[in-house]
Image 1: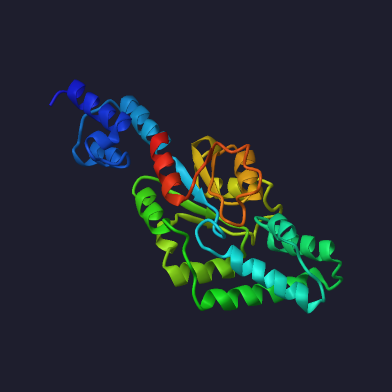
Image 2 (image 1 turned 90 degrees about the vertical axis):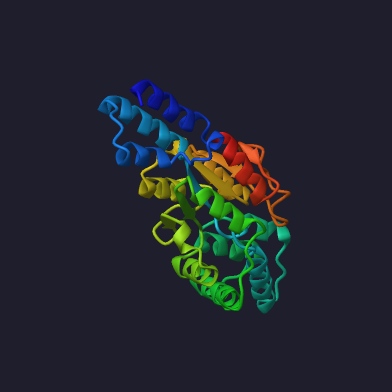
Length: 266
Protein backbone atom coordinates (compact mmCIF):
# COMPACT_ATOMS: atom_id res chain seq x y z
CA UNK A 1 0.00 0.00 0.00
CA UNK A 2 1.17 3.52 -0.72
CA UNK A 3 1.50 6.18 1.93
CA UNK A 4 -1.12 8.23 0.05
CA UNK A 5 -3.65 5.40 0.28
CA UNK A 6 -2.95 4.80 3.95
CA UNK A 7 -3.20 8.50 4.67
CA UNK A 8 -6.60 8.64 2.98
CA UNK A 9 -7.75 5.58 4.90
CA UNK A 10 -6.73 6.98 8.27
CA UNK A 11 -8.33 10.33 7.53
CA UNK A 12 -11.54 8.49 6.61
CA UNK A 13 -11.43 6.77 10.00
CA UNK A 14 -10.84 10.09 11.74
CA UNK A 15 -13.60 11.97 9.95
CA UNK A 16 -16.17 9.19 9.54
CA UNK A 17 -15.35 6.38 12.00
CA UNK A 18 -18.80 4.81 11.74
CA UNK A 19 -18.43 4.37 7.98
CA UNK A 20 -16.06 1.47 8.54
CA UNK A 21 -17.21 0.60 12.05
CA UNK A 22 -13.92 1.41 13.78
CA UNK A 23 -13.75 3.50 16.95
CA UNK A 24 -11.33 6.46 16.72
CA UNK A 25 -9.20 4.91 19.49
CA UNK A 26 -8.10 2.08 17.18
CA UNK A 27 -6.11 4.31 14.85
CA UNK A 28 -2.96 4.76 16.98
CA UNK A 29 -2.90 0.99 17.47
CA UNK A 30 -2.94 0.53 13.71
CA UNK A 31 -0.02 2.90 13.37
CA UNK A 32 2.08 0.83 15.76
CA UNK A 33 1.09 -2.74 15.06
CA UNK A 34 0.89 -2.57 11.29
CA UNK A 35 4.20 -0.66 11.09
CA UNK A 36 2.84 1.88 8.67
CA UNK A 37 5.67 4.16 7.62
CA UNK A 38 4.31 7.62 8.26
CA UNK A 39 6.73 10.50 8.85
CA UNK A 40 6.80 11.18 12.61
CA UNK A 41 5.42 14.70 12.25
CA UNK A 42 2.50 13.45 10.13
CA UNK A 43 1.73 10.65 12.59
CA UNK A 44 1.88 13.09 15.50
CA UNK A 45 -0.65 15.38 13.85
CA UNK A 46 -2.99 12.49 13.17
CA UNK A 47 -2.74 11.21 16.73
CA UNK A 48 -3.41 14.71 18.03
CA UNK A 49 -6.52 14.81 15.86
CA UNK A 50 -7.60 11.45 17.27
CA UNK A 51 -7.20 12.69 20.81
CA UNK A 52 -9.35 15.71 20.01
CA UNK A 53 -12.07 13.37 18.77
CA UNK A 54 -11.78 11.24 21.92
CA UNK A 55 -13.29 13.94 24.12
CA UNK A 56 -13.51 13.06 27.80
CA UNK A 57 -16.98 12.65 29.27
CA UNK A 58 -17.39 13.58 32.94
CA UNK A 59 -20.48 12.46 34.83
CA UNK A 60 -22.17 13.83 37.89
CA UNK A 61 -23.44 10.94 40.01
CA UNK A 62 -26.49 11.72 42.18
CA UNK A 63 -29.60 12.21 40.09
CA UNK A 64 -27.74 11.61 36.83
CA UNK A 65 -26.29 8.11 37.17
CA UNK A 66 -28.39 6.90 40.09
CA UNK A 67 -31.86 7.78 41.31
CA UNK A 68 -30.59 9.02 44.66
CA UNK A 69 -32.09 12.50 44.91
CA UNK A 70 -35.29 10.97 46.29
CA UNK A 71 -33.16 9.42 49.05
CA UNK A 72 -31.52 12.76 49.92
CA UNK A 73 -34.84 14.59 49.79
CA UNK A 74 -36.54 12.10 52.11
CA UNK A 75 -33.57 12.21 54.51
CA UNK A 76 -33.84 16.00 54.56
CA UNK A 77 -37.57 15.84 55.29
CA UNK A 78 -37.04 13.36 58.11
CA UNK A 79 -34.36 15.48 59.76
CA UNK A 80 -36.56 18.57 59.44
CA UNK A 81 -39.41 16.70 61.15
CA UNK A 82 -37.05 15.59 63.92
CA UNK A 83 -36.51 19.29 64.71
CA UNK A 84 -40.17 20.23 64.37
CA UNK A 85 -39.61 21.87 60.98
CA UNK A 86 -40.85 21.50 57.43
CA UNK A 87 -38.51 21.82 54.46
CA UNK A 88 -39.80 22.97 51.07
CA UNK A 89 -39.01 21.41 47.71
CA UNK A 90 -37.48 24.74 46.71
CA UNK A 91 -34.93 24.51 49.53
CA UNK A 92 -34.18 20.87 48.77
CA UNK A 93 -33.66 21.83 45.13
CA UNK A 94 -31.22 24.62 46.03
CA UNK A 95 -29.20 22.13 48.07
CA UNK A 96 -28.61 19.88 45.08
CA UNK A 97 -25.15 19.67 43.53
CA UNK A 98 -23.38 21.44 46.39
CA UNK A 99 -20.64 20.11 48.66
CA UNK A 100 -22.19 18.13 51.54
CA UNK A 101 -21.32 20.65 54.26
CA UNK A 102 -22.43 23.60 52.10
CA UNK A 103 -25.68 21.80 51.35
CA UNK A 104 -26.49 21.05 54.99
CA UNK A 105 -25.49 24.60 56.03
CA UNK A 106 -28.06 25.97 53.58
CA UNK A 107 -30.62 23.53 55.00
CA UNK A 108 -29.95 24.55 58.62
CA UNK A 109 -29.88 28.29 57.93
CA UNK A 110 -33.10 28.19 55.93
CA UNK A 111 -34.97 26.19 58.57
CA UNK A 112 -33.43 27.94 61.57
CA UNK A 113 -31.86 24.80 63.02
CA UNK A 114 -28.96 25.65 65.34
CA UNK A 115 -27.48 22.16 65.62
CA UNK A 116 -23.85 22.06 64.39
CA UNK A 117 -23.71 21.48 60.65
CA UNK A 118 -21.31 18.56 61.04
CA UNK A 119 -23.82 16.78 63.30
CA UNK A 120 -26.67 17.32 60.84
CA UNK A 121 -24.50 16.09 58.00
CA UNK A 122 -23.67 12.87 59.85
CA UNK A 123 -27.38 12.31 60.50
CA UNK A 124 -28.24 12.81 56.84
CA UNK A 125 -25.43 10.69 55.42
CA UNK A 126 -26.11 7.83 57.82
CA UNK A 127 -29.68 7.69 56.57
CA UNK A 128 -28.62 7.95 52.92
CA UNK A 129 -25.99 5.20 53.20
CA UNK A 130 -28.47 2.96 55.02
CA UNK A 131 -30.91 3.22 52.10
CA UNK A 132 -28.25 2.83 49.41
CA UNK A 133 -26.83 -0.30 51.04
CA UNK A 134 -30.25 -1.92 50.61
CA UNK A 135 -30.44 -1.12 46.92
CA UNK A 136 -29.59 1.52 44.33
CA UNK A 137 -31.66 2.29 41.26
CA UNK A 138 -29.57 3.29 38.24
CA UNK A 139 -31.12 5.98 36.08
CA UNK A 140 -32.74 4.70 32.85
CA UNK A 141 -30.19 4.20 30.10
CA UNK A 142 -27.11 4.25 32.35
CA UNK A 143 -25.85 0.81 31.30
CA UNK A 144 -26.22 1.64 27.59
CA UNK A 145 -24.56 5.02 28.03
CA UNK A 146 -21.53 3.71 29.90
CA UNK A 147 -20.97 0.77 27.57
CA UNK A 148 -21.33 2.98 24.48
CA UNK A 149 -19.14 5.86 25.62
CA UNK A 150 -16.52 3.68 27.31
CA UNK A 151 -15.48 2.32 23.91
CA UNK A 152 -14.10 5.60 22.59
CA UNK A 153 -14.07 8.21 25.37
CA UNK A 154 -12.14 8.45 28.64
CA UNK A 155 -14.79 8.64 31.37
CA UNK A 156 -14.74 10.28 34.79
CA UNK A 157 -17.07 11.09 37.68
CA UNK A 158 -17.12 14.47 39.40
CA UNK A 159 -19.57 14.24 42.28
CA UNK A 160 -20.36 16.35 45.31
CA UNK A 161 -20.85 13.15 47.29
CA UNK A 162 -18.12 12.09 49.74
CA UNK A 163 -15.84 9.23 48.80
CA UNK A 164 -17.37 6.62 51.08
CA UNK A 165 -20.82 7.10 49.52
CA UNK A 166 -19.31 6.86 46.03
CA UNK A 167 -17.61 3.63 47.11
CA UNK A 168 -20.99 2.18 48.09
CA UNK A 169 -22.47 3.07 44.70
CA UNK A 170 -19.52 1.71 42.70
CA UNK A 171 -19.56 -1.53 44.70
CA UNK A 172 -23.30 -2.11 44.57
CA UNK A 173 -23.62 -1.41 40.83
CA UNK A 174 -20.14 -2.60 39.75
CA UNK A 175 -19.38 0.58 37.81
CA UNK A 176 -15.83 1.45 38.86
CA UNK A 177 -14.17 -0.22 35.86
CA UNK A 178 -15.80 2.24 33.45
CA UNK A 179 -14.02 5.28 34.90
CA UNK A 180 -10.42 6.44 34.61
CA UNK A 181 -10.97 9.10 37.29
CA UNK A 182 -13.42 9.41 40.19
CA UNK A 183 -13.31 12.89 41.70
CA UNK A 184 -15.31 13.26 44.93
CA UNK A 185 -15.87 16.30 47.12
CA UNK A 186 -13.33 15.05 49.68
CA UNK A 187 -10.45 17.16 48.36
CA UNK A 188 -12.43 20.02 46.83
CA UNK A 189 -12.43 23.41 48.53
CA UNK A 190 -15.23 25.06 46.57
CA UNK A 191 -18.36 23.11 45.71
CA UNK A 192 -20.55 23.38 42.63
CA UNK A 193 -21.45 25.77 40.99
CA UNK A 194 -17.75 26.59 41.34
CA UNK A 195 -15.90 24.70 38.54
CA UNK A 196 -13.11 23.42 40.82
CA UNK A 197 -14.30 19.82 40.94
CA UNK A 198 -14.51 19.58 37.14
CA UNK A 199 -11.14 21.22 36.63
CA UNK A 200 -9.60 18.72 39.06
CA UNK A 201 -11.15 15.81 37.18
CA UNK A 202 -9.90 17.17 33.85
CA UNK A 203 -6.39 17.63 35.25
CA UNK A 204 -6.33 14.00 36.42
CA UNK A 205 -7.56 12.89 32.99
CA UNK A 206 -4.93 15.15 31.38
CA UNK A 207 -7.63 16.53 29.10
CA UNK A 208 -8.29 20.28 28.67
CA UNK A 209 -11.75 21.78 29.23
CA UNK A 210 -12.19 22.36 25.48
CA UNK A 211 -11.95 18.59 24.96
CA UNK A 212 -14.32 17.70 27.80
CA UNK A 213 -18.05 17.03 27.96
CA UNK A 214 -19.94 17.35 31.25
CA UNK A 215 -23.22 15.57 32.01
CA UNK A 216 -25.29 17.05 34.84
CA UNK A 217 -28.83 16.83 36.19
CA UNK A 218 -28.87 19.98 38.37
CA UNK A 219 -28.52 23.65 37.54
CA UNK A 220 -25.75 24.10 40.11
CA UNK A 221 -23.77 21.24 38.63
CA UNK A 222 -24.38 22.30 35.04
CA UNK A 223 -23.20 25.81 35.88
CA UNK A 224 -20.00 24.33 37.32
CA UNK A 225 -19.48 22.39 34.10
CA UNK A 226 -20.08 25.44 31.95
CA UNK A 227 -17.80 27.62 34.07
CA UNK A 228 -15.04 25.03 33.69
CA UNK A 229 -15.06 25.59 29.94
CA UNK A 230 -16.50 22.18 29.05
CA UNK A 231 -19.29 21.41 26.61
CA UNK A 232 -22.16 20.93 29.05
CA UNK A 233 -25.20 18.69 28.62
CA UNK A 234 -28.07 18.87 31.10
CA UNK A 235 -30.16 15.77 31.75
CA UNK A 236 -32.87 17.10 34.10
CA UNK A 237 -34.68 14.71 36.43
CA UNK A 238 -38.14 14.99 37.93
CA UNK A 239 -36.48 16.87 40.80
CA UNK A 240 -34.65 19.41 38.61
CA UNK A 241 -36.73 19.88 35.47
CA UNK A 242 -37.98 23.28 36.68
CA UNK A 243 -34.45 24.60 37.32
CA UNK A 244 -32.69 27.02 34.97
CA UNK A 245 -30.66 25.29 32.25
CA UNK A 246 -30.78 28.12 29.72
CA UNK A 247 -26.98 28.45 29.73
CA UNK A 248 -26.05 24.86 28.81
CA UNK A 249 -25.04 23.63 25.36
CA UNK A 250 -27.70 20.95 25.10
CA UNK A 251 -30.66 19.74 27.19
CA UNK A 252 -31.19 15.99 26.83
CA UNK A 253 -34.41 14.15 27.54
CA UNK A 254 -32.53 11.29 29.17
CA UNK A 255 -29.17 9.51 29.12
CA UNK A 256 -29.97 7.75 25.84
CA UNK A 257 -30.59 11.12 24.20
CA UNK A 258 -27.40 12.53 25.73
CA UNK A 259 -25.39 9.58 24.38
CA UNK A 260 -26.80 10.05 20.90
CA UNK A 261 -26.00 13.76 21.00
CA UNK A 262 -22.41 13.09 22.09
CA UNK A 263 -22.01 10.86 19.03
CA UNK A 264 -22.80 13.85 16.81
CA UNK A 265 -19.97 15.84 18.41
CA UNK A 266 -17.25 13.38 17.33
